[in-house]
Image (cartoon, rainbow, N blue to C red; front, side, top):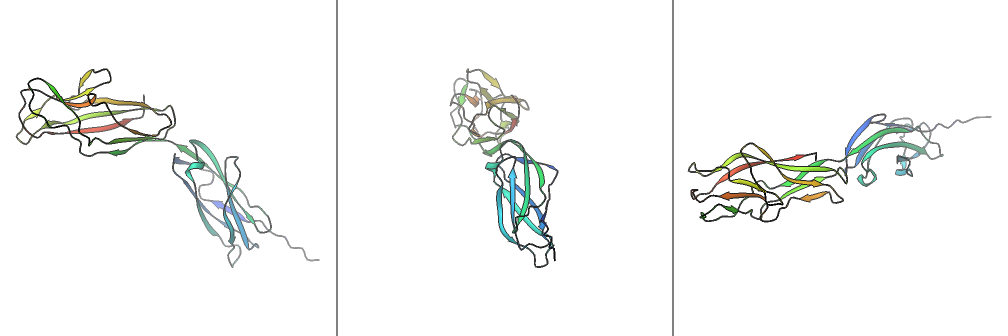
Length: 244
């Protein structure tokens, strides 16, 4: 009597037994190889934590020279990876129903705080020299968009730093002209080189936040009666702080 012993497939996972960081909202791409000494076809599966396994490759042909390694690669969709640590396992099943070894990787999904867009050049309204200190309001070209994927309840704030005083081509300056006016109408001078908190937020369900102030609040330019007529430019540096 002839006895045939069928062998199960074997699989490897490049990131096996490691912890891999992944940004929330980003897919995780796993890769590796499998081999089988006698079967013609295999199915490849992955599972996230204790969820139902997903067949990500079906009826994959074995090599003509059975036993040779065959590479695989697949990206797990971002919507299957919530914030936190996840155990991702991968295995193969051959056409006789035999299951391979299971390889496991820990995927650590974390959110992040970042600028989505910041307008390079922003401006204030043109105005005549006033007879008393007067605010020049922001034009409509202020576009600052922040993305926070750290989850509801996360705190952050935006700071602005005046890096270069406002000046014109003739060497005239608007010193101490950049102001921040808070929700209560309290004015703060944005001194050269001094970081000023200009926006604070606790993240809710909405992850994308457009930085907006009321027209008479936020960052404004205060023009005194004694300034020279001219086109003035300065430099503001923006910084996101991952903290209350």
